[in-house]
Image 1 (cartoon, rainbow, N blue to C red):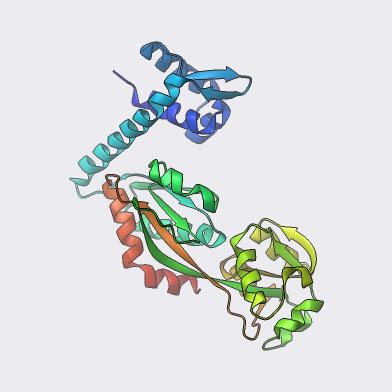
Image 2 (cartoon, rainbow, N blue to C red):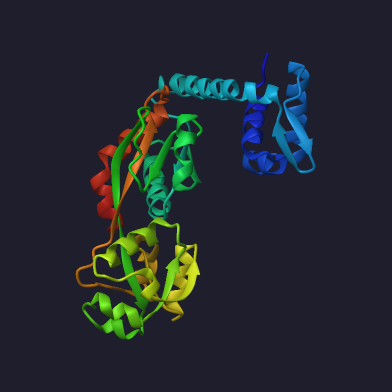
Length: 306
């Protein structure tokens, strides 16, 4: 009979194409991963991976087996969750994909709040790009996703979740810090720290400034950083001013290390959406988590102060 532990190792190894990374994700040693893969191959009588140095790739047999392995693991998880829920205790493992800075702050908060009611549910949050969230949802690798764009697909349900505000932040000793507001034109003389070009933050800022006839090329950009937390630290140290998610800047604002400045006529908002696969069978944990988000949306917004 097939061993579920070996099937899980196989599925993760197929995703990572690296036994070391598989071992890290599953909290196993690399020899244990190799042993379980070899054991599964011996049992099935086929080679599932081609080995090439540290990397591995699926054979034809492995590619055929992968969707069946995922279905088997999903069924096992659903069976366990359903049976345990008969005791009125929701348990299980839920994997959520997250594409945005705001999601990085909102989703962990929601997961922590949810765990107070259902401590038997383990939530794993996986960061991904906007373009890569749909396929894992369709393949049931993600049970839920948070996206900054509305996902339109016949097999996916997409609901509004949260509105993220992009704020202009300056150092606490900056001349702007003592003003109630500034004009968009005032930004042209300031050293700017920008988030990377393909980020949703820069896209939101670009559209907002365009309404006032300002292009990104007109800004005095002194630094481009991919991490919003690093941008906030750079602003703290007086390296420039920046537009970042208010959630990313929240800690610095509360400690008076940076100051949020209102820009006249500029309202930078981006909606977040929560997405799930409507075709897949849901475990009690998945259903409860989705319902928890829908029922507590107002409280989430109020608590995070966005």
